[in-house]
Image (cartoon, rainbow, N blue to C red; front, side, top):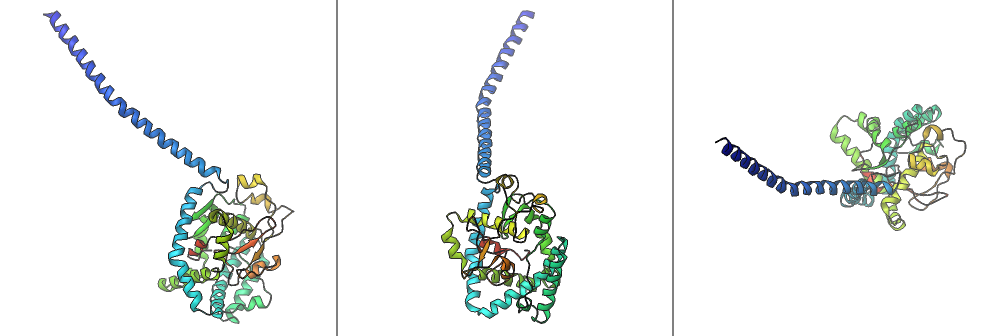
Length: 340
């Protein structure tokens, strides 16, 4: 009796083991398939990351940036550019000049504040003087009387300010609607937005949005003549405008006299080491800006001319430098809300 019971238990164990083996054998292909899927996905991620980082040390997010660039280009093509073309066709040149002057005058208080934060009280005083003159004699900024009197206009924003404080640029980044930035400039967008007089002087939201939209269309219309030039000059429009934007931002940070940048500096930080560069003694000649009508701008007067129609930091402008011919912020940058 005991022997029969032992045999029965032994048979049960063998049957149970066989069933477990069948279950394990059936589960093994699924397990191998799952591991293969995970491996393929991991390899794809690594490969994609490698492709994005080997193109340019300044642009490790190139895949994302190109997608956003295409989105902004499409938005410009179907919405912003047609509006700008209509505005350019309907509004006479004096009217367009007054609109551009009006918005340029509104920027001067924030420019003065940033010059003060950068330790340039003389330029801050100049900016405040420009605003006072143009807001009164110039009839709310419609006429740029200050420039006629030889008072120079500057271009500053909070991104340049923190750069002067020693914050590196970080990677290049293309934002939807706002266009090209660096990580540093993207993080300062909110501060620049609050510093925009349109934001804190106009409480009525619809009126404020109308002003934002008018400024956007005015900026875009001012660079319509540059579109064809950029399309013809650039084999890779994205790369062309990326390099141009970075060059222009660097030039603005150093007030037109950027120090020489080594390949090692560019590889480690697209913006360079500001703490070191701000004390560098030697500097290259600033780029020679060229207006959309082809008129060259002398290095000593470029910042004044940039305030005129056809020149804007958030929209394309042509530039020639001692080493190459490229400086234009992508047209899609004009889709920003004015937090430049």
